Length: 319
Image 1 (cartoon, rainbow, N blue to C red):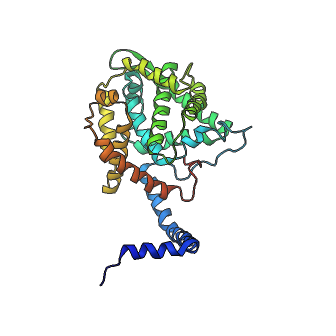
Image 2: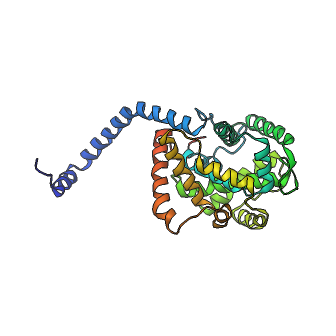
Image 3: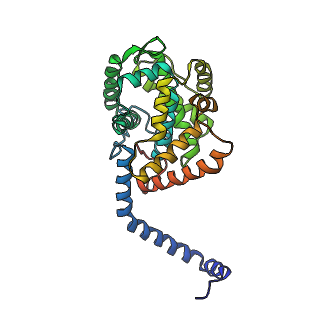
């Protein structure tokens, strides 16, 4: 069989002009329709393997009843599920460095026995406080507050801890929001301006205040200063290292599930501050993230985005 001259193909396509463009668009639409059943099956399989809810919450669009402003930045940041998964894993690694927060998780949760259940509950909480009504969000917040009132004890370093401690609430919230935004900025379909990032921290602060925080960072500068200040209190004790190993190892049994988790967790490690990776004892060779992890993770996020959110704009809810 004779090979096709690429230059002749290019010339022919250029002569088709507008007609060719319309035909190409029609072909893409046909392929999209043909791919829908495959995409739906893939979406179900992906959601099962990741342990996320089967269907996203119906967003409250009335500003009078919505918990967060429907047109706000927070909904846009939280709209991309693949990058939110990266951010969620990064947040867990970062949160583990606070010995009191980690003690509460280690001694009062079953994350090792039911990791998908914990992920579903966390995803549901983020979803309802982002897209739900005021009544829905406050009901979910009150459920968390009830759980927090029971979570208390003595950490391995001898200090008492309580999950409803306002400072611990600030830490958990800040680590989560910082990680979500950083992941979306690196792996999401859109990039947010400095003003939008400030708005994100300001808007999402209401969740922490309703949970019982007395103060939370409400801008990029405040978040940067807060992380710098709290860093002296963070270290990787035995409980943190155990959580680290669990998160890095994953729970997938099928090779494809393990491969997806490996890429997501590598992307999560890559967005952590350097000092956090060093404290967690995770080696990170120079250029490894740029040349290996980031391109692979972006490709995976694009594939997951295609499977999980067909035809959805970057600003539509995905959680």
